[in-house]
Length: 397
Image 1 (cartoon, rainbow, N blue to C red):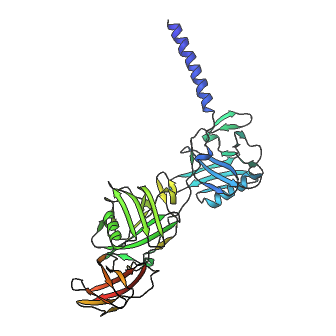
Image 2 (image 1 turned 180 degrees about the vertical axis):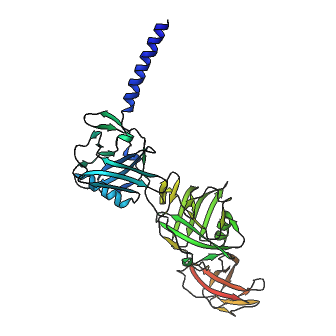
Image 3 (image 1 turned 120 degrees about the horizontal axis):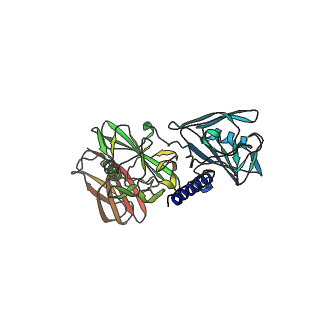
């Protein structure tokens, strides 16, 4: 019985060594569909991979090109040109160094890098003359991070799982001095921006406040109250819709918006918990208008445009309205230009509706507006009659 057990264990050990060696010699690969960043243009595609040791890391780029083939050198040169994190050194057709440094990973292997695979087979030519065609994958490494499969031909495979390189992308920003419309009052400032697509558009408001910090929800609520062009829906700490409509632009993205950045970094709290301090830059968007630079981390590269000042007057409504006296103390009179039913509305400087009434009047009639209950400041009066809209600024003393 002991002999049988020993024989069984011996056979299992041999089988284990065989299967371990068999699987160890399977070169790790990656599906082109999983590549995050394609560099170059054209109808042909090649996957480019490099293995490093200490730590064991394998990274992959996608490369597109036109024409029947391209040299490995040309491909690597363009990848190095577009991705400053990647670089290499070579001479006389041989590579001596390949590096990658993104500020977190600092990868380097020095030596004579002459081992690389093209579509599963060891390359026969130096990188300056070796050509690749559509569908190939090129994989570099050396013996320090690989397993030899044929000592006579110096054939290696590299088992390290391959991670796709995330693209470089820089968050588009805007200078505080370029903001046109500031909401709120106080010595502290923050910028609030939203990305939309179809069309690609990013709009920014300025927000002023007192105190050391403010909750993002309060900031957004106050901007929405001051600017009726902007609106959003939210529940349970998540924003589901962000819209902007000024009569010309009709911007909307629907869905569970849980992606927003503060000063270029992904926020970790819901908008009803996230605090904002002086100098912060808040930017909303989703993957449909952003670039993923790490898992669940997006940046939005659309140019940030300042929102125009909201004055309760549509920019396309250029007709004027006669008001007298202006400035007003207790009352003022609006001259009606169109006979029939007229809707007379008053907005404050932040675009909030103060009053609205419908009156029947003839052309030239004057409608009295009481200003007794209005605080001193600037207001806008709007009279609408069957599509004809006339506006005027009213100063109340």
